[in-house]
Image (spheres, rainbow, N blue to C red):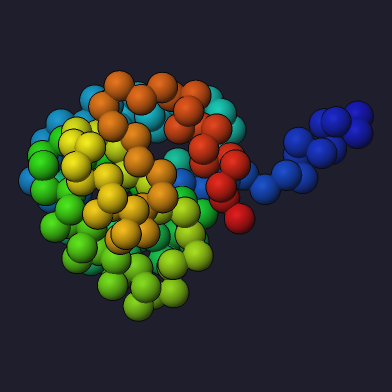
Length: 139
């Protein structure tokens, strides 16, 4: 095994939980993001549709992920994230990277940042930008 191969073999993979919150029933975009993150070498746990804030917080804790990602197209992202934030904090997950993507109107971005979602990727964001952001910001 070469030094480069050993380096790759010993690097810790970034672990991402990607959740579909609330009543949102569209997940094609989320599945495309899952594939892109996996192709970039990340371990991705996709929750499937219609997750509650409690379920997202529990899975993030149980799986000890580095990134808690949401994909939302239903327009309920701010109320969902408002409910999720205290659950993540109660489980000591505030040191994880919180990102969100989907149908996110620009007027909601500040509210999402104030809730702790530093990575905001509206519909049409480049997959490379999502991958690069996660790589640069995971602690």
